[in-house]
Image (cartoon, rainbow, N blue to C red; front, side, top):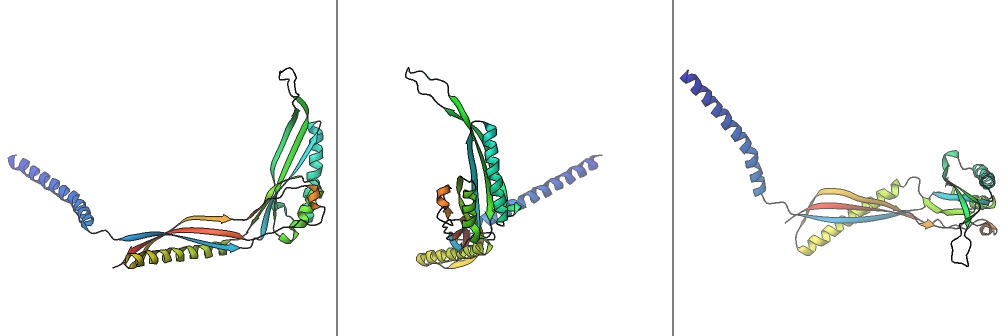
Length: 251
């Protein structure tokens, strides 16, 4: 009985010792790692930009109609918008490139002036109906003609034209390469100034990518189209990429 108890105690002690050694090994490894000198690095930010001529336009066109009743305003708006949509489709705009983006019915009030200092209640004088459609024009050569026709048929509100690219991948790729080249040039300039060597690339991360299309804002008014096709300037879209690059420092 005595020897059996002693054996169990000895076995338990050996197990405890083994666990303690196992737990100590990672701590020793971490201590050894922390004792090693940290590799010197340099982190730089590179920026690259590339331009591309737009090949597509996004337009918001609206019809605003006023009448004494909501029904009359809606009927007038429906007719004008139906004519515009039909004309857009005749001009080659596909269904997938047309989307209703806004519809509102708002009462219109008149606020009487009072000579007694009182605030008389507003008087309902009619209703206003606004219907807005967003269209994508893939053939920019037809853009001026499309705007002319839409305004002629009743479009009297516009939030602007956005010139975009259907596939900007080539411009983004070029901007990305320029960003890395810019980062490498900065790192070389800094290390040369510091009198140290530039080592291998340890890490590259892309922090931002943004498209910077040139906006073109035009108010839609009937007299704007009377002189012929709407004059347009498409310009270029600029695509910008920013990267962070970490380099090791040499001797």
